[in-house]
Length: 265
Image (cartoon, rainbow, N blue to C red; front, side, top):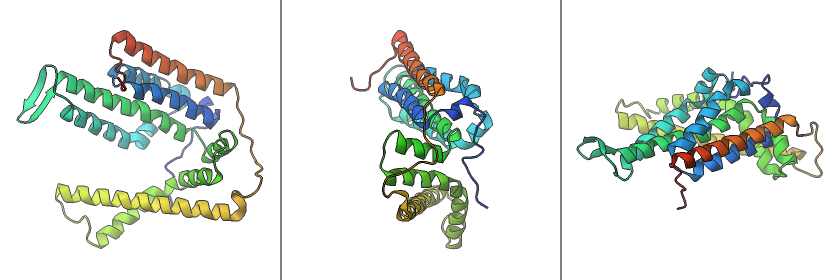
C-alpha cells in the first residue's frame, strides 16, 4: 500500500478554496522580497506572519513538522555553513583553532537560515492546501502553460506519495548488494546521497513515462475542454492582498531597522 505524503488535505480552510494561481502569486511576492535582502529582520517578519497565519490557513503544526522537517534541517545546515564560512568581521564570539565565529558571520548565518524557512513555508502551505488536479487546471487555463509541462507536474504530484515506498525499496535493494552496510559516518553519508540520487532519477523517469502515456491517450491533443473551470473568487483577492502586505511589512521593517541589505548593491 502506498503512502500519500500529500494527505490529509485541508479542505476546511478558506485558503484551500483559493485559486492555485493566486497562491503562487502571493508566494512569489513574498519570496522576491525575502530574496532581495540578506537580513534577519525581513525574514523574521515574514516567518512570524506565516506562523501566525497557520490557524487561518488551516495548517496543523504537527503535520507541518512531519512534512517540513527536512527543510528545517537544511535551513540549520545552511545557517551553520554560512556562519562558518562568511567573512570574519565584527567581534569574535567563539574561536577554536581555525573555526571562528564573529558577530557578523553569525548574523549572516541566522539571516540565511530564516530566509530559507520563510521561502520554504509558502510552498509547503500550497502543497498541503491544493489538490494536484486543481493546480494543473489553473496552470493550463489561467497561465496557459504547455500541456506536457502541466501533465508532468500533475503526474509528479500524484506520484509523490510513492516516494516513501520507493525509498524503502531502494534501501532494501542496496543493502542486498552490500551498499551502505558499513557503520562509518562517511560511508553512511555516501550511501544516503547515492540512494537519494537514485530516488530522484526514478521519480523523474516515472513521472515522464506517465506524462507521455497521458499525452499519447489524447490529453494534450487538439482543443481542450475542461470538466472543471478554474475560476477566481473573493478569497483570491484576500490571498493576494495578504501576500503583498506581508512582503511590504517585511521590507518596511528591515528599512526602518537599518538592516536592509540589497543583494545587488
